[in-house]
Image (cartoon, rainbow, N blue to C red; front, top):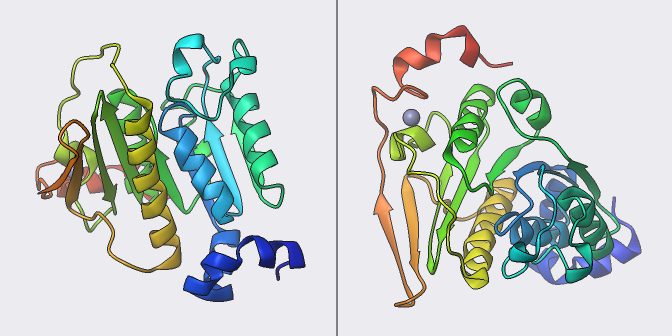
Length: 251
Ligand SMILES: [Zn+2]
């Protein structure tokens, strides 16, 4: 059931998917890995849409160099934990939802537990080793993983549905070298918004997801494209062999 305030708040989107759709969003739990450039727009748009429980995980502290793109964090937040800054803003923008902000580094010992019973995972990270870990947990729990990545004016996004689509390892078998990436805030905003939109469609069960499709954005040319991606039967994460290993059994 919704309060009068919630009905007013969500009025313009309930015109699209009704009370039932809004109820789905309210009951949903979404896990966002990263409260940075992508995590900011993803979490803001999921919060304003009324996704009932948002868990956001980040271990960093807000730095001056973050502020050109990480719009959850303000100048006054420099030196604060990103999680406390994120929780404050998200709770302020929508007091009717629950925000869990966890200040921890995601690793193989805690990833599955942190993700818990989430309905979906958002990859708002900037490194591939942790992305691969999210990919493994998504496969084990059979929940979608919405990937996003950015560099400069370029961005990419895709939605991984275990058992249906290629996984992150099928698409990117090897991590690119770690580097300090140049990034324009607007690119993070665009890709993060695509990711939030994917999560909403998935939760509502409407539209076409970016399944088996890698969305590519070239901000310099103002050109969007997509690449069809396929499962690798020999994939070490989702291939037929991998599925039988006990570590990937459904918990
Ligand atoms: Zn795979």
